[in-house]
Image 1: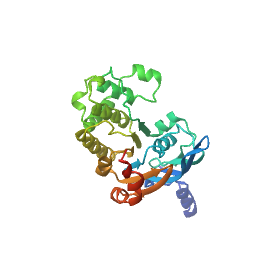
Image 2: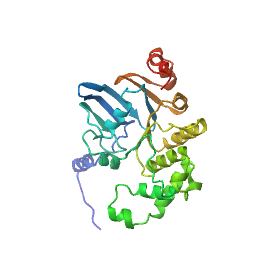
Image 3: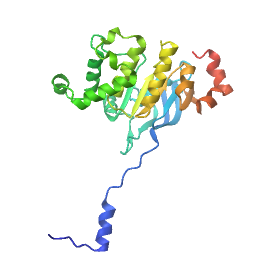
Image 4: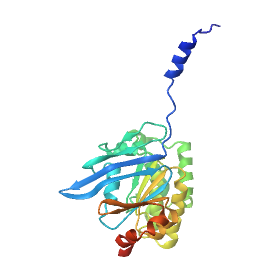
Length: 276
């Protein structure tokens, strides 16, 4: 057996070449001075904020405040006039999302659920989950390959989280409205995203369903960051870690939910209009 003999200087040189462990940023998204102009009308003006990792971050405000436009910017559905969105994946280099293809942003680990559920109503709950699991895979894999046991275990675990495990064999079309929303959240979650963006997830729900949705999201935030657009203030109070108020395309205020909702200016421009 032979050993390599190196000098102290050579040893230090080798140590310096070792790739350092990347630090985990406390923020998963940085919205960096975003402005969006449509034919002379500014939907967003110099919006700058950061989304903390594993937070539930709400964007609220009156109709036309720019909330949905901001989500469109994050997932690159809309191109900003100026500014950029920076994604900080876990233990990896930051990625500028602005200008990237939408499907590539999904592959990076940023999912989005729209207000109206888009489940396959003629398939079972489990079949919907399997299809969602295969997003981004090759066509042959999607058609021919059966899920691995580990994947089916993950589907089962995710359905347990949203309370649909006992309805795995039900057709999605037979689910109640709230259950369809939970199924679509599960379909996002099963892809193991780092960020999930939800557009009014409590819309059309009664109070018990809304409360359960909040409890589901509190469980989900242990695994990923949750960004929510919402108008139901009771729902916001139930689960928000941070609230950003948009008004006429600008950030009016942001901070903790109690602080924000108690602010007289916020009450005047938003809550004073009946909470939409």
